[in-house]
Image 1 (cartoon, rainbow over the protein chains, first blue to last red):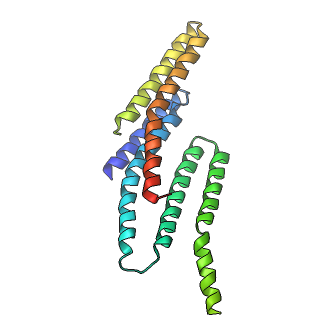
Image 2: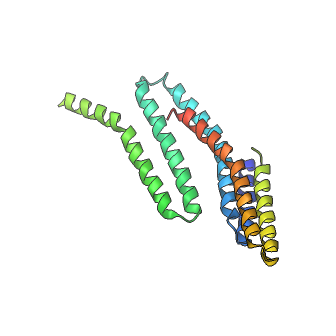
Image 3: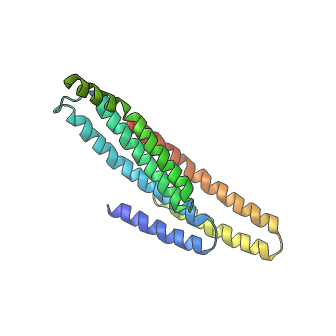
Length: 125
Length: 64
């Protein structure tokens, strides 16, 4: 965790310094720092994915739903990261578009679950 | 993938800004622009492989 904090702080310090020299290297440094921190985040996320897949043994959930859940997690993760980078660079319009498209694709991937829910509801009625 | 990437980018940033200032004051505007362009391309060359690799691991991890 200390490694992550140190990378973040060093990146911010250098980015502020480079932005002070009035050129666009502050944004490049911010992007490089984000990519590096993402790298460490992905290692932790793979642990979470293993835990989720190990839950399959206990709960008899269809494999399809867990795959859909992981897909939604991935889409949200990527959309959030790219939107944050775009907002950091100052282009909030692009970042809001990326977030919107992320939400739409999550809605799209959750369609089978909604369908299954409706089936169970109508079968009860 | 260590911290050296960030230091390299910062070094390129400082170097390019100093070079462009010197070239601007000595009257060569085009060289100043070219050096900043070269710095941009160099930084992109360093960052893009990491970004590609990162998105590949995410895609493979979440089976997107």
